[in-house]
Length: 161
Length: 289
Image 1 (tube, one colour):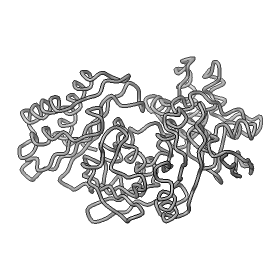
Image 2: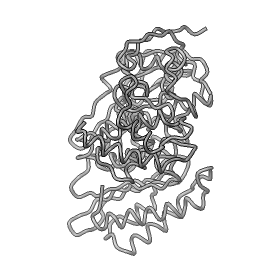
Image 3: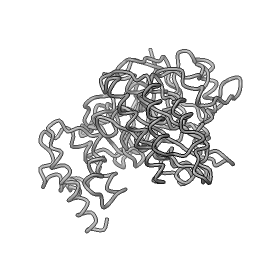
Image 4: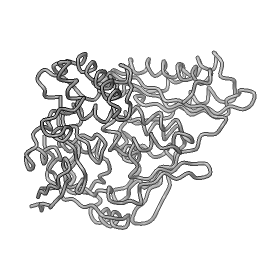
Protein backbone atom coordinates (compact mmCIF):
# COMPACT_ATOMS: atom_id res chain seq x y z
CA UNK A 1 0.00 0.00 0.00
CA UNK A 2 1.51 3.30 -1.06
CA UNK A 3 1.38 6.04 1.48
CA UNK A 4 -0.67 9.19 0.92
CA UNK A 5 1.13 12.50 1.17
CA UNK A 6 0.02 15.86 2.56
CA UNK A 7 0.20 18.71 0.10
CA UNK A 8 -0.54 22.43 0.14
CA UNK A 9 -1.54 24.39 -2.94
CA UNK A 10 -2.34 28.08 -3.30
CA UNK A 11 -5.44 27.83 -5.48
CA UNK A 12 -6.95 31.07 -6.77
CA UNK A 13 -5.20 32.93 -3.95
CA UNK A 14 -6.38 30.63 -1.16
CA UNK A 15 -4.26 28.10 0.69
CA UNK A 16 -5.74 24.64 0.26
CA UNK A 17 -4.69 21.32 1.77
CA UNK A 18 -5.17 17.76 0.59
CA UNK A 19 -3.92 14.28 1.39
CA UNK A 20 -3.39 12.31 -1.78
CA UNK A 21 -1.75 9.28 -3.34
CA UNK A 22 1.34 10.14 -5.45
CA UNK A 23 -0.51 9.02 -8.59
CA UNK A 24 -3.32 11.54 -8.05
CA UNK A 25 -3.33 14.02 -10.94
CA UNK A 26 -3.54 17.74 -10.27
CA UNK A 27 -6.70 17.86 -12.41
CA UNK A 28 -8.38 15.29 -10.15
CA UNK A 29 -7.27 17.03 -6.96
CA UNK A 30 -8.75 20.30 -8.20
CA UNK A 31 -12.04 18.65 -9.15
CA UNK A 32 -12.52 16.02 -6.48
CA UNK A 33 -10.55 17.06 -3.39
CA UNK A 34 -11.11 20.81 -3.80
CA UNK A 35 -14.46 20.81 -5.61
CA UNK A 36 -13.33 23.10 -8.42
CA UNK A 37 -15.15 21.48 -11.32
CA UNK A 38 -14.39 24.27 -13.77
CA UNK A 39 -11.20 22.48 -14.79
CA UNK A 40 -12.41 19.91 -17.30
CA UNK A 41 -10.80 16.58 -18.14
CA UNK A 42 -10.86 15.43 -21.74
CA UNK A 43 -8.11 13.18 -23.03
CA UNK A 44 -5.96 12.69 -19.92
CA UNK A 45 -2.80 12.58 -21.98
CA UNK A 46 -2.06 16.20 -22.68
CA UNK A 47 -3.57 16.56 -26.13
CA UNK A 48 -6.95 18.29 -25.74
CA UNK A 49 -6.13 21.22 -23.45
CA UNK A 50 -9.45 21.17 -21.53
CA UNK A 51 -7.61 20.85 -18.18
CA UNK A 52 -5.25 23.81 -18.72
CA UNK A 53 -4.56 25.89 -15.58
CA UNK A 54 -1.96 28.48 -14.66
CA UNK A 55 0.83 26.88 -12.62
CA UNK A 56 3.06 29.49 -11.00
CA UNK A 57 1.75 31.95 -13.58
CA UNK A 58 2.33 29.87 -16.71
CA UNK A 59 -0.15 27.65 -18.51
CA UNK A 60 0.14 23.94 -17.80
CA UNK A 61 -1.85 20.76 -18.38
CA UNK A 62 -3.24 19.72 -15.00
CA UNK A 63 -3.68 16.13 -16.27
CA UNK A 64 0.10 15.92 -16.84
CA UNK A 65 1.10 16.82 -13.29
CA UNK A 66 1.01 14.74 -10.17
CA UNK A 67 -0.29 16.94 -7.37
CA UNK A 68 2.49 15.78 -5.03
CA UNK A 69 5.09 17.03 -7.53
CA UNK A 70 3.67 20.58 -7.50
CA UNK A 71 3.25 20.78 -3.72
CA UNK A 72 3.49 24.46 -2.73
CA UNK A 73 2.67 25.82 -6.20
CA UNK A 74 0.26 28.63 -7.04
CA UNK A 75 -2.58 27.46 -9.24
CA UNK A 76 -5.14 29.59 -11.05
CA UNK A 77 -8.17 27.76 -12.42
CA UNK A 78 -10.97 29.18 -14.56
CA UNK A 79 -12.83 29.99 -11.33
CA UNK A 80 -10.00 32.32 -10.36
CA UNK A 81 -9.75 34.32 -13.58
CA UNK A 82 -12.51 36.82 -12.78
CA UNK A 83 -13.56 38.32 -9.48
CA UNK A 84 -16.56 36.32 -8.30
CA UNK A 85 -19.47 36.99 -10.70
CA UNK A 86 -17.47 39.53 -12.71
CA UNK A 87 -16.47 38.30 -16.14
CA UNK A 88 -12.99 39.20 -17.39
CA UNK A 89 -12.66 41.04 -20.75
CA UNK A 90 -11.66 37.68 -22.31
CA UNK A 91 -14.73 35.95 -20.87
CA UNK A 92 -16.96 38.82 -22.03
CA UNK A 93 -15.53 38.54 -25.54
CA UNK A 94 -16.18 34.77 -25.58
CA UNK A 95 -19.77 35.48 -24.45
CA UNK A 96 -20.40 38.19 -27.06
CA UNK A 97 -18.88 36.21 -29.94
CA UNK A 98 -20.60 32.88 -29.19
CA UNK A 99 -17.15 31.39 -28.73
CA UNK A 100 -18.59 28.35 -26.99
CA UNK A 101 -21.23 25.81 -27.83
CA UNK A 102 -21.08 22.90 -25.39
CA UNK A 103 -18.51 24.74 -23.29
CA UNK A 104 -16.36 21.73 -22.52
CA UNK A 105 -13.16 23.21 -23.94
CA UNK A 106 -13.90 26.74 -22.69
CA UNK A 107 -12.02 26.71 -19.34
CA UNK A 108 -8.85 25.53 -21.07
CA UNK A 109 -9.33 28.05 -23.86
CA UNK A 110 -9.80 30.91 -21.38
CA UNK A 111 -6.70 30.03 -19.37
CA UNK A 112 -4.63 29.58 -22.54
CA UNK A 113 -5.79 32.93 -23.92
CA UNK A 114 -5.15 34.66 -20.59
CA UNK A 115 -1.45 33.74 -20.80
CA UNK A 116 -1.23 34.34 -24.55
CA UNK A 117 -2.62 37.90 -24.50
CA UNK A 118 -0.45 38.83 -21.54
CA UNK A 119 2.56 37.82 -23.66
CA UNK A 120 1.29 39.02 -27.04
CA UNK A 121 -1.15 41.91 -26.60
CA UNK A 122 -1.55 42.64 -30.31
CA UNK A 123 -1.56 39.30 -32.17
CA UNK A 124 -2.61 38.71 -35.77
CA UNK A 125 -5.00 35.88 -36.64
CA UNK A 126 -2.16 33.50 -37.51
CA UNK A 127 -0.63 34.00 -34.05
CA UNK A 128 -4.04 33.50 -32.40
CA UNK A 129 -4.58 30.25 -34.29
CA UNK A 130 -1.09 29.08 -33.38
CA UNK A 131 -1.71 29.86 -29.72
CA UNK A 132 -4.95 27.85 -29.75
CA UNK A 133 -3.57 24.96 -31.77
CA UNK A 134 -3.16 22.72 -28.73
CA UNK A 135 -6.67 23.30 -27.41
CA UNK A 136 -9.25 21.15 -29.12
CA UNK A 137 -12.86 22.29 -29.59
CA UNK A 138 -14.89 19.34 -30.87
CA UNK A 139 -17.89 21.59 -31.64
CA UNK A 140 -15.37 23.10 -34.08
CA UNK A 141 -16.34 26.63 -33.14
CA UNK A 142 -12.83 27.90 -33.86
CA UNK A 143 -13.87 30.85 -36.05
CA UNK A 144 -15.83 32.39 -33.20
CA UNK A 145 -13.09 31.63 -30.70
CA UNK A 146 -10.52 33.39 -32.88
CA UNK A 147 -12.92 36.35 -33.26
CA UNK A 148 -13.35 36.46 -29.47
CA UNK A 149 -9.60 36.48 -28.87
CA UNK A 150 -9.18 39.26 -31.43
CA UNK A 151 -11.88 41.33 -29.68
CA UNK A 152 -10.51 40.56 -26.21
CA UNK A 153 -7.04 41.68 -27.31
CA UNK A 154 -8.49 44.98 -28.50
CA UNK A 155 -10.52 45.44 -25.32
CA UNK A 156 -7.50 44.71 -23.12
CA UNK A 157 -5.30 47.10 -25.10
CA UNK A 158 -7.91 49.86 -24.88
CA UNK A 159 -8.31 49.28 -21.14
CA UNK A 160 -4.52 49.50 -20.87
CA UNK A 161 -4.27 46.37 -18.76
CA UNK B 1 -7.08 6.66 -17.76
CA UNK B 2 -5.31 7.02 -14.43
CA UNK B 3 -1.74 5.92 -13.77
CA UNK B 4 -0.90 2.78 -11.80
CA UNK B 5 0.24 3.35 -8.19
CA UNK B 6 3.86 4.34 -7.59
CA UNK B 7 6.02 5.58 -4.73
CA UNK B 8 7.32 9.13 -4.90
CA UNK B 9 10.49 10.91 -3.82
CA UNK B 10 11.56 14.50 -4.40
CA UNK B 11 15.05 15.08 -3.01
CA UNK B 12 16.35 18.64 -2.56
CA UNK B 13 19.80 18.02 -4.01
CA UNK B 14 21.70 16.02 -6.61
CA UNK B 15 23.15 13.70 -3.98
CA UNK B 16 19.62 12.77 -2.92
CA UNK B 17 18.59 12.11 -6.53
CA UNK B 18 21.59 9.85 -7.09
CA UNK B 19 20.98 8.02 -3.83
CA UNK B 20 17.36 7.31 -4.79
CA UNK B 21 18.40 6.29 -8.31
CA UNK B 22 21.06 3.97 -6.92
CA UNK B 23 18.52 2.34 -4.64
CA UNK B 24 15.58 2.05 -7.04
CA UNK B 25 17.20 2.57 -10.47
CA UNK B 26 15.74 -0.39 -12.36
CA UNK B 27 12.20 0.27 -11.10
CA UNK B 28 12.33 4.06 -10.98
CA UNK B 29 12.00 6.88 -13.47
CA UNK B 30 13.19 10.46 -13.14
CA UNK B 31 10.35 12.99 -13.29
CA UNK B 32 11.31 16.34 -14.79
CA UNK B 33 8.54 18.20 -16.65
CA UNK B 34 6.56 15.03 -17.20
CA UNK B 35 5.20 16.08 -20.58
CA UNK B 36 6.27 12.81 -22.22
CA UNK B 37 6.39 10.48 -19.21
CA UNK B 38 3.03 11.32 -17.61
CA UNK B 39 0.96 10.70 -20.78
CA UNK B 40 2.60 7.26 -21.03
CA UNK B 41 1.84 6.64 -17.35
CA UNK B 42 -1.76 7.81 -17.71
CA UNK B 43 -2.17 5.38 -20.61
CA UNK B 44 -0.42 2.72 -18.47
CA UNK B 45 2.09 2.10 -21.23
CA UNK B 46 4.74 2.81 -18.58
CA UNK B 47 4.30 1.74 -14.94
CA UNK B 48 7.35 2.67 -12.86
CA UNK B 49 7.30 1.50 -9.24
CA UNK B 50 8.81 4.82 -8.22
CA UNK B 51 9.10 8.36 -9.52
CA UNK B 52 12.05 10.50 -8.44
CA UNK B 53 11.33 14.16 -9.10
CA UNK B 54 14.23 16.49 -9.85
CA UNK B 55 11.97 19.54 -9.60
CA UNK B 56 13.25 20.53 -6.14
CA UNK B 57 16.91 20.45 -7.14
CA UNK B 58 17.61 24.13 -7.75
CA UNK B 59 21.22 23.36 -8.71
CA UNK B 60 19.95 21.81 -11.97
CA UNK B 61 18.28 25.06 -13.05
CA UNK B 62 21.03 26.88 -14.95
CA UNK B 63 22.05 28.11 -18.38
CA UNK B 64 25.85 28.59 -18.46
CA UNK B 65 27.86 30.16 -21.24
CA UNK B 66 31.24 28.44 -21.66
CA UNK B 67 33.96 29.38 -24.16
CA UNK B 68 32.52 27.37 -27.02
CA UNK B 69 29.37 25.85 -25.50
CA UNK B 70 26.04 26.70 -23.91
CA UNK B 71 25.24 24.36 -21.03
CA UNK B 72 21.62 23.75 -20.07
CA UNK B 73 20.81 22.07 -16.76
CA UNK B 74 18.30 19.27 -16.29
CA UNK B 75 15.57 21.45 -14.77
CA UNK B 76 15.53 24.13 -17.46
CA UNK B 77 12.09 24.19 -19.08
CA UNK B 78 11.85 24.26 -22.85
CA UNK B 79 10.07 27.65 -22.81
CA UNK B 80 12.70 29.00 -20.42
CA UNK B 81 15.52 27.96 -22.77
CA UNK B 82 13.61 29.21 -25.81
CA UNK B 83 13.26 32.65 -24.19
CA UNK B 84 16.73 32.73 -22.63
CA UNK B 85 18.83 35.64 -23.90
CA UNK B 86 22.07 33.62 -23.97
CA UNK B 87 20.43 30.73 -25.84
CA UNK B 88 18.86 33.07 -28.40
CA UNK B 89 22.11 34.92 -28.99
CA UNK B 90 24.59 32.04 -28.86
CA UNK B 91 22.50 29.16 -30.11
CA UNK B 92 19.55 30.33 -32.22
CA UNK B 93 19.10 26.86 -33.73
CA UNK B 94 18.16 25.45 -30.33
CA UNK B 95 15.65 28.25 -29.63
CA UNK B 96 14.24 27.71 -33.11
CA UNK B 97 13.87 23.94 -32.57
CA UNK B 98 12.27 24.37 -29.13
CA UNK B 99 9.55 26.60 -30.60
CA UNK B 100 8.25 23.49 -32.41
CA UNK B 101 7.93 21.38 -29.24
CA UNK B 102 4.33 20.73 -28.14
CA UNK B 103 2.19 23.73 -27.25
CA UNK B 104 3.06 26.63 -24.98
CA UNK B 105 1.63 24.80 -21.96
CA UNK B 106 3.85 21.78 -22.69
CA UNK B 107 6.95 23.91 -23.22
CA UNK B 108 6.28 25.78 -19.96
CA UNK B 109 6.82 22.52 -18.10
CA UNK B 110 8.76 20.10 -20.28
CA UNK B 111 12.54 20.29 -19.95
CA UNK B 112 15.22 20.30 -22.64
CA UNK B 113 17.15 17.48 -20.97
CA UNK B 114 13.99 15.48 -20.27
CA UNK B 115 13.15 15.47 -23.95
CA UNK B 116 16.68 14.30 -24.78
CA UNK B 117 16.66 11.58 -22.13
CA UNK B 118 13.22 10.42 -23.30
CA UNK B 119 14.57 10.03 -26.84
CA UNK B 120 11.28 10.23 -28.72
CA UNK B 121 12.04 9.56 -32.39
CA UNK B 122 9.78 12.46 -33.37
CA UNK B 123 11.02 14.92 -30.72
CA UNK B 124 12.76 18.08 -31.90
CA UNK B 125 15.46 18.55 -29.20
CA UNK B 126 17.32 15.34 -30.16
CA UNK B 127 17.71 16.59 -33.74
CA UNK B 128 18.95 19.97 -32.50
CA UNK B 129 21.42 18.24 -30.15
CA UNK B 130 22.81 16.19 -33.05
CA UNK B 131 23.14 19.21 -35.34
CA UNK B 132 24.85 21.17 -32.55
CA UNK B 133 27.38 18.41 -31.71
CA UNK B 134 26.04 18.41 -28.16
CA UNK B 135 27.86 16.81 -25.25
CA UNK B 136 25.44 14.86 -23.10
CA UNK B 137 26.62 15.23 -19.51
CA UNK B 138 25.49 12.16 -17.61
CA UNK B 139 25.81 11.67 -13.86
CA UNK B 140 25.47 8.52 -11.79
CA UNK B 141 26.62 6.89 -8.57
CA UNK B 142 30.09 6.31 -10.05
CA UNK B 143 30.59 9.88 -11.20
CA UNK B 144 30.17 11.86 -14.37
CA UNK B 145 30.67 10.94 -18.02
CA UNK B 146 30.17 12.81 -21.25
CA UNK B 147 28.74 11.19 -24.35
CA UNK B 148 28.56 12.90 -27.75
CA UNK B 149 25.02 13.30 -29.06
CA UNK B 150 25.98 11.17 -32.07
CA UNK B 151 26.42 8.16 -29.73
CA UNK B 152 23.61 8.96 -27.29
CA UNK B 153 20.41 7.85 -29.05
CA UNK B 154 20.20 4.08 -29.46
CA UNK B 155 16.63 3.63 -30.69
CA UNK B 156 13.05 4.71 -30.07
CA UNK B 157 12.86 5.87 -26.42
CA UNK B 158 16.29 4.33 -25.82
CA UNK B 159 19.52 6.13 -24.92
CA UNK B 160 22.87 5.21 -23.35
CA UNK B 161 21.73 6.45 -19.91
CA UNK B 162 21.92 3.52 -17.47
CA UNK B 163 19.18 2.78 -14.94
CA UNK B 164 21.10 4.41 -12.08
CA UNK B 165 22.17 7.47 -14.11
CA UNK B 166 20.51 10.66 -15.29
CA UNK B 167 21.21 13.43 -17.78
CA UNK B 168 22.55 16.30 -15.67
CA UNK B 169 23.00 18.80 -18.50
CA UNK B 170 23.39 19.18 -22.23
CA UNK B 171 26.20 21.29 -23.66
CA UNK B 172 25.55 22.48 -27.23
CA UNK B 173 28.11 24.22 -29.41
CA UNK B 174 27.87 27.99 -29.54
CA UNK B 175 27.05 29.34 -32.95
CA UNK B 176 30.02 31.06 -34.59
CA UNK B 177 29.92 34.09 -36.85
CA UNK B 178 30.66 31.94 -39.90
CA UNK B 179 27.66 29.66 -39.29
CA UNK B 180 24.09 29.62 -40.48
CA UNK B 181 21.38 27.33 -39.17
CA UNK B 182 17.66 26.68 -39.21
CA UNK B 183 15.03 24.22 -38.01
CA UNK B 184 12.18 23.22 -40.31
CA UNK B 185 9.27 20.89 -39.64
CA UNK B 186 6.13 19.56 -41.27
CA UNK B 187 3.31 18.14 -39.17
CA UNK B 188 -0.33 17.35 -39.64
CA UNK B 189 -1.23 20.11 -37.22
CA UNK B 190 0.76 22.85 -35.52
CA UNK B 191 2.51 21.52 -32.42
CA UNK B 192 1.29 17.97 -32.98
CA UNK B 193 3.63 15.07 -33.69
CA UNK B 194 6.05 15.82 -36.49
CA UNK B 195 5.80 14.06 -39.82
CA UNK B 196 9.35 15.15 -40.62
CA UNK B 197 11.82 17.67 -39.28
CA UNK B 198 15.25 19.04 -40.08
CA UNK B 199 17.95 20.69 -37.96
CA UNK B 200 20.51 22.17 -40.33
CA UNK B 201 23.81 23.87 -39.51
CA UNK B 202 26.45 24.96 -42.01
CA UNK B 203 29.79 26.70 -41.54
CA UNK B 204 31.31 28.68 -44.42
CA UNK B 205 34.77 30.07 -45.14
CA UNK B 206 35.33 33.53 -46.61
CA UNK B 207 35.08 32.18 -50.17
CA UNK B 208 31.65 30.66 -49.47
CA UNK B 209 32.88 27.07 -49.30
CA UNK B 210 31.01 24.90 -46.79
CA UNK B 211 33.55 23.80 -44.20
CA UNK B 212 31.17 21.97 -41.85
CA UNK B 213 27.71 20.52 -42.49
CA UNK B 214 25.33 19.06 -39.95
CA UNK B 215 22.11 17.57 -41.31
CA UNK B 216 19.98 16.02 -38.54
CA UNK B 217 16.50 14.69 -39.25
CA UNK B 218 13.45 13.42 -37.39
CA UNK B 219 10.96 11.09 -39.04
CA UNK B 220 13.97 9.58 -40.80
CA UNK B 221 14.48 6.48 -38.64
CA UNK B 222 13.79 5.08 -35.19
CA UNK B 223 15.68 7.96 -33.56
CA UNK B 224 16.69 11.43 -34.62
CA UNK B 225 19.74 10.90 -36.81
CA UNK B 226 22.41 12.64 -38.82
CA UNK B 227 22.44 12.00 -42.55
CA UNK B 228 26.13 11.36 -43.31
CA UNK B 229 25.73 11.18 -47.08
CA UNK B 230 24.10 14.61 -47.24
CA UNK B 231 26.73 16.10 -44.92
CA UNK B 232 29.56 14.73 -47.07
CA UNK B 233 27.88 15.95 -50.26
CA UNK B 234 27.73 19.49 -48.88
CA UNK B 235 31.21 19.75 -47.37
CA UNK B 236 34.18 21.27 -49.18
CA UNK B 237 32.27 23.04 -51.96
CA UNK B 238 30.05 26.04 -52.58
CA UNK B 239 26.37 25.77 -51.68
CA UNK B 240 25.13 25.87 -55.27
CA UNK B 241 22.32 24.13 -57.18
CA UNK B 242 24.40 21.02 -57.83
CA UNK B 243 25.37 20.68 -54.16
CA UNK B 244 21.76 21.11 -53.04
CA UNK B 245 20.46 18.54 -55.53
CA UNK B 246 23.15 16.05 -54.58
CA UNK B 247 22.54 16.45 -50.83
CA UNK B 248 18.78 16.00 -51.27
CA UNK B 249 19.31 12.87 -53.38
CA UNK B 250 21.67 11.42 -50.75
CA UNK B 251 19.22 12.21 -47.96
CA UNK B 252 16.31 10.51 -49.75
CA UNK B 253 18.46 7.39 -50.26
CA UNK B 254 19.84 7.28 -46.74
CA UNK B 255 16.75 7.93 -44.61
CA UNK B 256 14.73 4.98 -43.36
CA UNK B 257 11.47 6.58 -42.28
CA UNK B 258 8.87 4.80 -40.15
CA UNK B 259 5.27 4.37 -41.25
CA UNK B 260 2.77 5.27 -38.57
CA UNK B 261 -0.54 7.00 -38.01
CA UNK B 262 1.03 10.41 -38.81
CA UNK B 263 2.50 9.53 -42.23
CA UNK B 264 3.79 6.58 -44.24
CA UNK B 265 7.45 6.03 -45.09
CA UNK B 266 7.20 7.15 -48.71
CA UNK B 267 5.56 10.45 -47.80
CA UNK B 268 8.18 11.09 -45.12
CA UNK B 269 11.02 10.33 -47.52
CA UNK B 270 9.61 12.87 -49.98
CA UNK B 271 8.99 15.53 -47.32
CA UNK B 272 12.47 15.11 -45.80
CA UNK B 273 13.97 15.86 -49.19
CA UNK B 274 11.73 18.91 -49.59
CA UNK B 275 12.73 20.19 -46.13
CA UNK B 276 16.43 19.78 -46.89
CA UNK B 277 16.05 21.55 -50.23
CA UNK B 278 14.14 24.38 -48.54
CA UNK B 279 16.57 24.65 -45.63
CA UNK B 280 19.65 24.74 -47.84
CA UNK B 281 18.10 27.46 -50.04
CA UNK B 282 17.29 29.48 -46.93
CA UNK B 283 20.85 29.26 -45.70
CA UNK B 284 22.24 29.98 -49.19
CA UNK B 285 20.24 33.21 -49.12
CA UNK B 286 21.50 34.01 -45.62
CA UNK B 287 17.97 33.81 -44.19
CA UNK B 288 18.90 31.78 -41.12
CA UNK B 289 17.63 31.36 -37.58
